[in-house]
Length: 212
Image 1 (cartoon, rainbow, N blue to C red):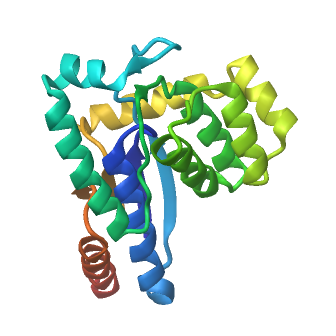
Image 2: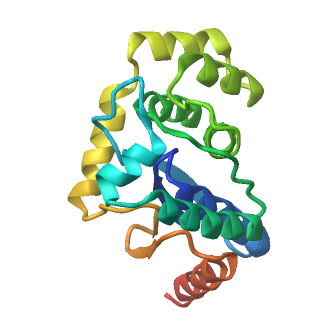
């Protein structure tokens, strides 16, 4: 079973969805042989390197007041706790293109899931800039990637065209919101769903495959 998880690092529902999906896969265990591929999506591809204040960003993009942002954060915090993910104080939104390049590189080394977890925690739990090279290098080292090779990737602009191509690919297929989970290139599950929803959907798809 192939699973493509399309997401952005600074998307809170992506953090919830990724944690829930991983828990669902743990529950499935050996019942389904899964290839999980992490796919890039930028919520704010035009975001400058210095980023933007979160409240200003939410007001500009969604028309949200500070009170509405606080209410949404409370809901997100509860949903995160349900899947074991901790949300902390996030005050800024950042550009994530270099984070996606690093994830592409990590995928070639078989460490994409580990770096994804580290990036989500860095931003959503600790409020760090996931596009800052020093942060990316530290996380790369923590998940077992070669730091100097990662530095060369970041400073040299490697895998930029690959990330852009993947982004265009998913947009051309109609993916305009994240997280989006595509199973076997034909079944779509959208949003930060609970563990049980992912588990049931994957079991039904696996059963359908067995019956083919």
